[in-house]
Image: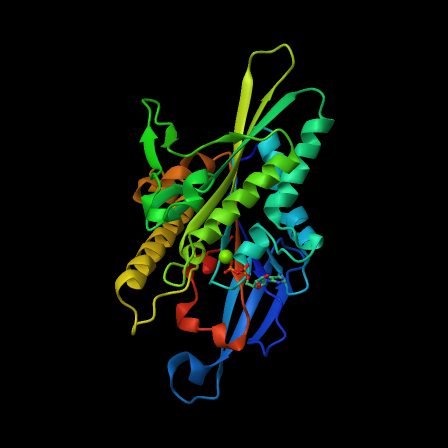
Length: 341
Ligand code: ADP
Ligand code: MG
């Protein structure tokens, strides 16, 4: 497989409210689309000024409000799943402010079957492939890791129900002589079919919600990494081929306001901003040609994903965007989504 850079997409959440002025422009002869926001200058810098200011962001493709889950899966997740079936690791991130549609995109909505997100659709796709491809014997295992304030927790740990997040065993990173990463206290559970895998997703999501209180909205302040470990073997052969697919629901990318935030909230926000910043550094380093040092070790997330970003791995990011007028804060626009794809 050809070494490729990171693919960056954007998805705009549907809204009935008044939206910011924006337009999506699919470039005809080139792969890519541009998302443009027009912000009156008086909003951008606090001075009254009638000139408009335009902000352009380029993506591989922009999925506008009407894009369906099916389309997002076909376009974004299927190629990564195919690559994982071919034996390479892959990672898909959802990045965006709280409320912009990260969880909807990665996991899906509960109301309609058609609202299934990338995880259930990918599981269905993988198991279908396993049963159709008679040239190999496949096994799949699932793990579901939550990273909160730089500490990892096993979302499939049954003790979640009875304990507070802080009291659960912490997942720690260990490295062997060959610099392979091992995660202590993270269970990896075999799932024989799609239903079993979906049950594990459901268990993990339930545990995500149990940990959530008004003071600790864990799911918006933590990163959740759902991993499918695929192992295949040709009948009669003893050679195993392993690959991993990580589906990552990142913590909300909103910046901390300058006033009124302190204590626990500020600590969380610092960790989130820092870990997103370290992820950005890794992604930028991977996209630069001839870079030899990639700073994986700075955060737990980049350490965990070290063998699944860049190189032969397919890495894809979906920047989810809410275009409700009140959400467009030019000064807070994340640098990550400006990064050219
Ligand atoms: P985040 O995880 O980024 O905080 P959510 O995925 O929870 O945001 O989305 C916030 C709300 O908007 C949820 O009620 C979700 O169902 C809804 N939503 C998000 N994206 C879409 C979409 N593309 N189509 C329909 N509803 C959506
Ligand atoms: Mg969410």
